[in-house]
Length: 86
Length: 114
Length: 164
Image (tube, rainbow over all chains, first blue to last red; front, side, top):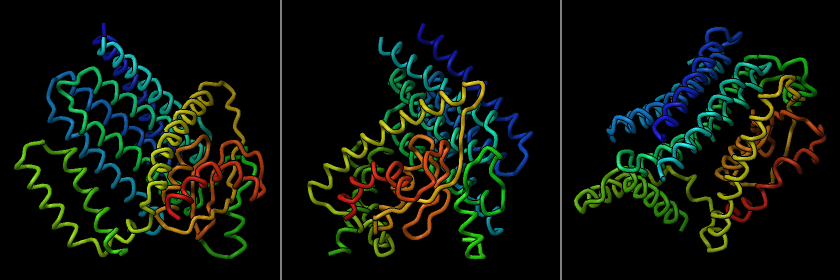
């Protein structure tokens, strides 16, 4: 029972990721695309931890942690680039 | 029993994540999209990860989940602030529904970008 | 004295993160302790931001209380945004308003700006000295004082005690 609910919530989060992907492809300005990328990153962090839980490997949560760090630095880099160039 | 509670918390979190993405799709301009994108996903991630940590306590050690949650709560507003500032700097306009834009007024008054 | 406070705060933060990440065996704890000490000695002069808050018991109690207030605000803001998104007509009334803060310390202003971003319907766009420019999803007043009252006041009274 509980496993089924976990799987359903992963599917719902994945549907959100597809919607954000649509906005990222379509988005009129570059800031829209960056925001959609940010949301996709956050959803994928959640899904990485989900995969770590169902495959019973603690080491995968480190991947999520490093991914969160890199995505934060990436978004800051995009913002700085938009503001005054690299 | 603990696993069932954890799974329900995860379900609520995933619904918030979905609504954040839906807000990205539906809102009219960049700044409103940012509001939906950062707020709904923050609580969504907190609940999703907390539910997983509760249900699979033997294989997702909670200190790491706690660090991840803290990191997301601290960095999510910073990244959205940086992007909003950059978007305003390069001159992306607000939607037509907007009432006021004090920042653009002040910039026009001083004759320079802040 | 100020240097000493900075030193202690940076060291304690590094140690807490080590304990959260690494295991709890004795050797690992010693290694993390030594590494934190070396990093703190190298960098505490540049970490000026950590010396800016009060460390008396009242400030610490207010800090714990502030975290609870922030959690409640996060939950409220998420429900508000979720409600807004699922309505078919999108009843929004957005705009950028200006507010003023009384806080002097830089760390206090950073935390205030981040808290404003996490509360219902507000997003900090630009900060300039003591003025914040805030994107508000439902503008009720364009006046600077009324906007300050309804956005900033809620947090400011706690942060004033913590950061002095």
